Every structure is written in structure tokens, then in C-alpha cells.
Image (cartoon, helix red, strand yellow):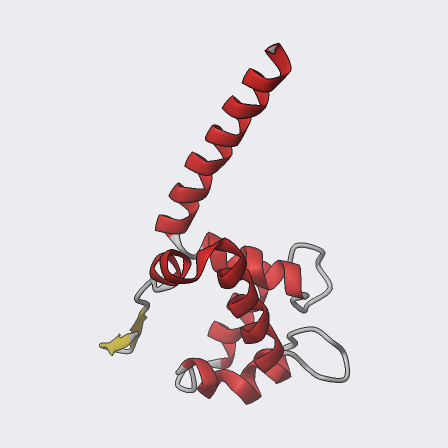
Length: 119
């Protein structure tokens, strides 16, 4: 991740991590990341826990509005926080290469399922 002209540029490392760790290993690492960012008392990532732990991700220079936008982007149930599933889904969504790979794997799985059902 690099900062250029007050913009944050993210370098997508998830495909490399998935290649080295496998799918289960990647999910395990994402869960560890969630643990680092979550509010220990509430069990979710809140605005305050994200702000307090932003430096873990190198995001200490982001504004409150940027942090709130990150929370809103992943908050599927509208509770203002990210649970572990929402966090993992958000990380996948923010990784275009991993999303493309996921689509290919889903198509393959569906093809295999159809082949098995016709046999």
C-alpha cells in the first residue's frame, strides 16, 4: 500500500496469499485479521475499534469519513459494524483477482455437480 497525493493505493495481496496458503489458509488469515481489528467486548469491528487499530493495517492517516465508508461498504445487515463473515466477504470483494478466481471455481463446481446429477 502506498500513499500518493493524499490518496491511498492498495496493493492486492490476497491472490498471492491464497496461492501460498490455499483457500482454508487464506480464510484463517482473514479471521486472524478480523480478531486484530474487532472490539473484544462486542465481537465485531466497530468504528472505534477500526480507528484504534487502523495502524495495524497502515491506515492511520485515513480520515474518520474514510473509515466510516469502509464500515458501510461491508456492513450487510445495517448494524453499523462488521461481523467476521462481513469482514471476510468485504476482503474478497475488494480483491478483483480473487473475485475473478472465485467465479471460475464456482462455475467449475456447478459443472461438476451437473455432471454428477446426470450420471
